[in-house]
Structure formats: C-alpha cells, structure tokens
Length: 366
Image (tube, rainbow, N blue to C red; front, top):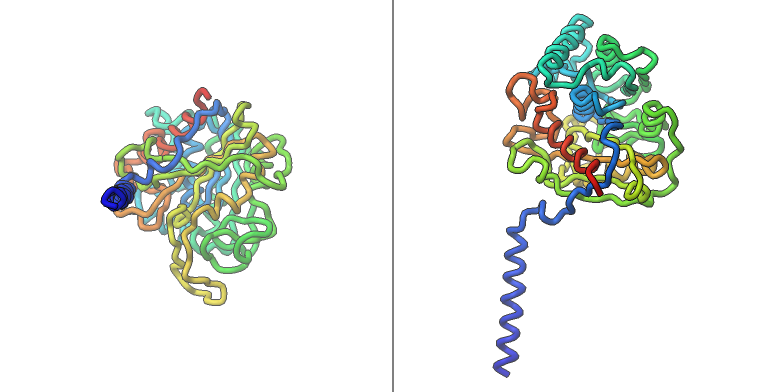
C-alpha cells in the first residue's frame, strides 16, 4: 500500500514538473526548423498588402539582383516616408494625394545614392522586371494616388512601361481582393482586410509576373509548415514574431522551385487580434474579432497557385511590440527599427535581412 501511495505521489510530482517546465519553454522551440530544400533564390517574386506592400517594394529594390517581380497592393513608392513616421501616416497613406511628381523624382535620386553606397543592388536590375500594382479607388487608409506614384517611381527607375500593370478597382477599400472570400468589396475598410471584389488578386498578379502560369489547383496537397523565425534574428528587437509560415508543394521537396514571399499588412500577423479603428459602419462590423491566425495563409489563394506551378510561398510574420514601438504589427517602412537614416529600406535593414536569411535557408542543400 505504501509503495502505491509513493508511486502515486511521484506521478503527481512528475506531471507538476512537466507542466512547470513547459511554462518556461520558449514558444520558438515548439516550431519546426525552416527546411533547406534547394529552392531557387535567384528567381524570387514578392508581394504584400499595405505596410506589407511597402515592404514588398523595399525587398524588391534592395535585393533586385535576386528578385524578378513584385506585386504591390494598397501601398506606395519606395522610400516614400524617408525615415519619418509623420510622412508614413500622412503623405504616404491618408494624404497620398499630396505626393508630387517632383517628390517621386527625389525618391528615385535617394535610391541612386543608396545604390552608389552598395546598400541596395543595382537599380538597372529592375529594367526588365515585372511590377503589378493594385489599389481600390475608395481606399481611406492609403489613397489611390499612391498607386499612380508607385508606377511613376518604377518608370523613373527605368522599368519599361509595358512591364508595369496597374489595376484600380472601383469602390474598393483597403483590402486584398479575392473572388469569393472576405468582406463585401464596397464595404468600408474592415478586419481581416480581405474583400470579395470578384477579382482574384493572387492569380491575376502571379499571371502578370510570370510569362506562363497554370490555373490554381482545386485543393492543396503540399505541406504548410509553422517554423521558428527567431533563429533568423536572434535576440534582436525588430517586432518579428516567433513563428512564420511556409507552404511547400510536394514536388518542391525534390525539384528546384521558385520562391514567392507575401508580406502581410498591419494587424494581419497570426497572433494579432485586430481592431476596427473607425467602427464607422456597424452594419458590417463584427466585434469581437478573433486572432488572425492562418486567415491570410488559408484564404488569399497563393497556396493553390503554388501547387500548380512549383512555387514555395514564404509568409514572414510580425507581432505587436512596444520595443520597438509597433502597436499595429506593421512592417517597417519608416524606420521604427533601423533609426539610422534609410537603413530600414536597404539590404542592411533588420527585417529585410531576416527575411533574406529565410530565403537563403530555403535555397540551401536538402
């Protein structure tokens, strides 16, 4: 009897110790290691929404030697904020109508200075690239003029006019457009910032960026991996989350596949509970909102396109943070992490560098 009581106490103690130990295990230890699968790091395409759209442009221009195309949804031109938060939330967003042609010319000249310092790849790499620009003409967050000025920026940088696709959807707000998922297209800007505009933004963009692309698969058959992001930035405080997502089609485990990177917008990181800042249309508001989780990863349609076209899709993730100050989990397009000049928009940028290290891992020997 004493032995049974002793064994019972030991079991209870072991369970208690296990629970205590799990409490102190870093979350990043729970996630898988991003695999090396021999992907093609010299044929990258990028896209993003809102702050992620700005980030996609930054990644494209900083690493133009390896990036061949970009999709910029509801965002503005490279270096638009010039390291200034005030400009980021006004001139580059809600007051984008104030952007002038002369200011865009200045931005291109600033980019050429960064090129001369080898902080970004040669701008001449952009000349034959494809750029897809999308905007809703009723976007209250980033006014539609930002799309026109993004087109102008790329043209001044030497991209052929016929290589820049500009799609403006009437009455659409600030959201990623789909054909069948999300809020109504004409609804005011609402979480999770995905709208059914009867327009498949992912498919249309990928079709434009690539010379040939097959229709999306009916169902996904590959593997969606939640991987540990922290190994790519360590203890550095840069507002990146503990985990990211990568979708790997089955054939990409044995064949050399292209890489596409999608950068989410503000409040769209997996761990964020979004808020409708305006609460201006109760008919369409739906509080309390749940965590974003895999909403974007599962809804936007990139994974089904990837399955048909041998493309690995990388979804880096951000979180809200007070240090650095990023309460809405936005990508850094004004310098909240890298406060030294325009470093945030160069190859040396903390967030850009971390994502490129993820790419290099995917391209590693499997």
